[in-house]
Image 1 (spheres, rainbow, N blue to C red):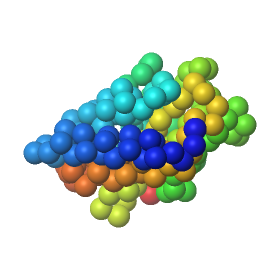
Image 2 (cartoon, rainbow, N blue to C red):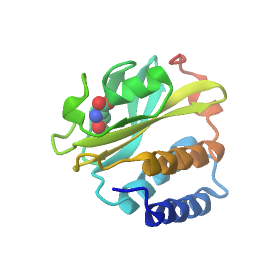
Image 3 (cartoon, helix red, strand yellow):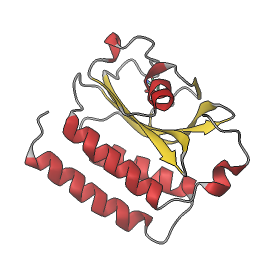
Image 4 (cartoon, rainbow, N blue to C red):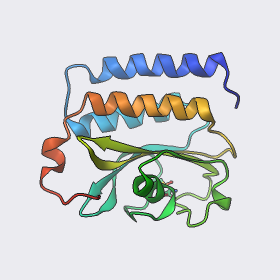
Length: 168
Ligand code: SME
């Protein structure tokens, strides 16, 4: 897909919807669940959208939409673990060519993983998969990073992460 105005419009609309959806609610899990649902149901050509959250030094499956997925990912492993370890977004045009990709669903062909950084610490990853090769481009990266930033701004992570060891 190209960096078209319609894609920018789509993400602007999604951001407005997300702000409205999260308004007045700060619970981390409730907001994560609605963020995953909004992405899954509004981004075209996507077959999984959801969170992996830092628990006990690993990434553990959090709120998501799509088929059941692997529960635990070690830091540094797979696309999600790499995004968490490097604390940077990873965009994978073809998962078959990504060394160490974790195939939860063989239908997934491309993927984007955005790290969640809150209060100066790594909290987890937001991951979106597509059945189409090269589905995600720079416009998607900007849009999905903005969605993650909006989710983090509106959600209180202190209570949820207070009792578990840091990932980093
Ligand atoms: N493919 C991911 C695993 C998570 S699923 O795609 C839902 C990875 O390699 O980290």
